Length: 334
Image (cartoon, rainbow, N blue to C red; front, side):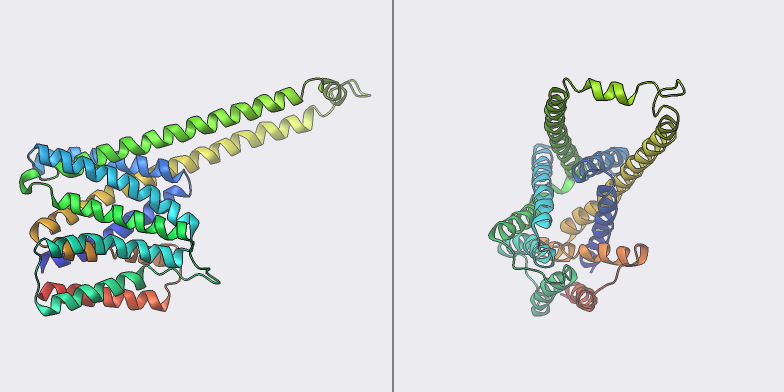
């Protein structure tokens, strides 16, 4: 019963982390938000690690580090998948694959249930599809690229769970520390590369504008020349507008960035709690159960969006939430 409860609660916490990450990504880049979240999660783990303990071993470092790599791949592919769309199809597809891959590995590896348990797994997969369904008006059929990207993202998420399951039982939070360290390093490297590329493009664009502007000084002199009353044309009013408006825009931009970073920090902290529950649930129970229940993470995002942002929950999503709770109860019995 405990693993099933951890899986269901963990899914809602994962969804809460995604909600905070989504708000952060609206204010700063998605990649930067992910990188900041990874670092804040790492800091939290390092703080609590001495109290919760964990043995550093080759297995803990290796599998934990590899899970960080798969996590970075999963995030990148997920963003690409949702950008391609349609979300109404690709989002639940990603969630289902993320559940089926580790569930299959768990069942092949020896996970066994009472008959009601297998029915519960099937019901849970249906719940994953319904909960992750994002209604879109006039949604088009997904392209082959979109489907492949969704499959890749789901497989990477599932691989993360498999790798966490392979970590030694005495490793405590060490695998999650390695996961966050590697994930954060990869994401910050990506942010740096993207910033470098953007900077070079901007520099080339500025050079082109500068070259095009050679010999255009005369109009500027005319515009800034003396007027009939001896003053400089356009000097007072435009100057006053720029003096007042520029700091306002700068302050607003700084506030936006600061808010985005704080939301990303919160996302990382909440995500660590969810990952800790996943780790404990896998060690106490079965990989197949935890993978299916964790795949219901969109439920947390949906509920928070409804409460905080007043977004409407579609009837099909309500049905998915009900089935998710029922499946969790059946798995607890099994």
